[in-house]
Image (cartoon, rainbow, N blue to C red; front, side, top):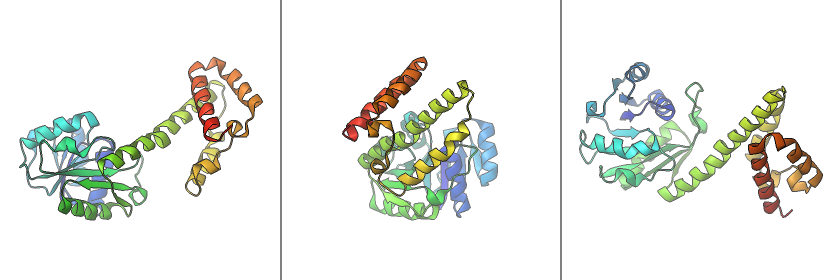
Length: 258
């Protein structure tokens, strides 16, 4: 399939490389930063563009991989260059596919459910691809395309994807923030973060094998009030972190009936 990628951020960068790796042709790659577009296009053997007005209408699919609040505006600009029956998708986890409806007749979603970092290789064999479209033919073709990228493909509508995105924020963004809090405390106390890494890894392994609730441990679940109070006393010097600890402890107690 001949594909144009609109956006060269983390998602656009990794997805475009994977698409090329499995045999698809990347026609054009767009980035507002000319140097970035040129650099990535060289890797993809694609044409770099730094303006939507330079889009050509020869691709089979156009993938918008930009920030959520820019998707509608980008689609509007694309419509000035492309026919209304062009196949267009976006990669957002939370933005409805219908943001594309005012501009294109054939629209949908191609959402890799993963956190991407520019300097870390993405393992697409373990990345779920969520797809959807307003047209059955396009949905089937997107499913076929997704299967070339990953063995884990799901047809998920806008409402379902919104729920998944909420929970993705919880398990990724929230937990990573907790890691950052722990890292900050340990840094200030001159203690090594590496001592917690095996615990983090074991917790992650268990949740892939068993229901998370059944694997929950810790003072809140045990009803260990003395330990909780000692923790809170220590956290007096980290006021914001203490608030998070209190909220999380209260939530754990409620969930586990303590």
